[in-house]
Amino acid sequence: MIISRAPFRISLMGGGSDLPAYYERFSGKTLSFTINKFVYVATNQSFHQRYRFVYSRVEEVTSLDQVVHPLIREIARDYPVPFIDFASFADVPAGTGLGSSSAFAAATALNLASYSGVSIAADDLADYSCRIEIDRLGEPIGKQDQYAVCLGGYNTLHFNRDGSVCSDRHSGVRVGRFLERHLSLVFTGITRRANSTLAEQTRNLRDDQAVVDCQREIVEMVGAMHEAVAMRDAKECGRLLHHNWELKKRLSSNVGEQSIDELYQKLLSMGAYGGKVLGAGNGGFVAVFHDDNFKERLKEVGLPTLEYRFWPDGAEVVENDAVLLPR
Image 1 (cartoon, rainbow, N blue to C red):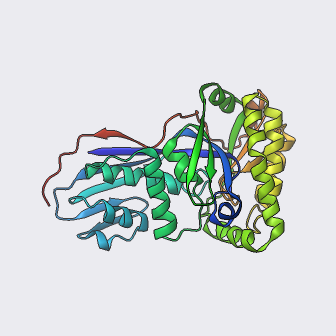
Image 2 (tube, rainbow, N blue to C red):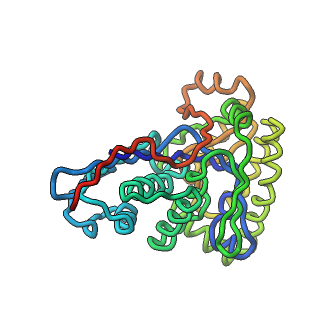
């Protein structure tokens, strides 16, 4: 059996600049870190003459070309393996703004590559995941999530005009403790795919100068957010995240809705310094910076939160005792 996993990520600043419509013109930059919540993929040699794929549904096929799930199908075509049983599960539901789709792609690619006897470095795994999701499947997404979950830890990612990506890896131990203490994730109760929001944002980045200006201002705050985190200044982090959210709502008509704004205003009234909705902004988790006592106030009012720890590592194989049998 081979078991692989990829961590979820929290994007602090710069999201949207990893879309080609922006970085191909101006270059982009994001700041993010990974947490101890994962997508897991497990594969095992099947004793039956068929493939069995278990995710949110179950597929049993005799040919990889028959697989319905697009990510599994395309990755399996690149790394064909003997008949296997495949299962995936996650610590957090999809559609919550934590990069679940790219984490699934990375964990799947790493697993099937390992089953095929192929080793992939983290940067190459991220690049491959981008090519599968964006180029081959035509998903209207950026490159931040793939690199964040494959590299792991606390990083500034740079998206160059030629499509290449490079990273500045920051020391994460003290930063992780600060974030765990002063950044909370509150669930909106809404899970949604980000595709329609990101597709509209891409169109707006091409056609609307006001949207481009908002995105540029968000990118310019990446350095300020990194500095505020380094200084352990939760209040300044909250102020920056709040301004990010105000700008983000101008990027697409699908960003934010009344119930989300009501939750966010409630968090501010409870003393949160500021925050934003993670991911594309139309559901999932609201991330807020706050003081030392805010977590207790969240518990008192019963708002659903996600407890997490900073995680320094990226996608990895955690178990590999596969013995390949001939097809």
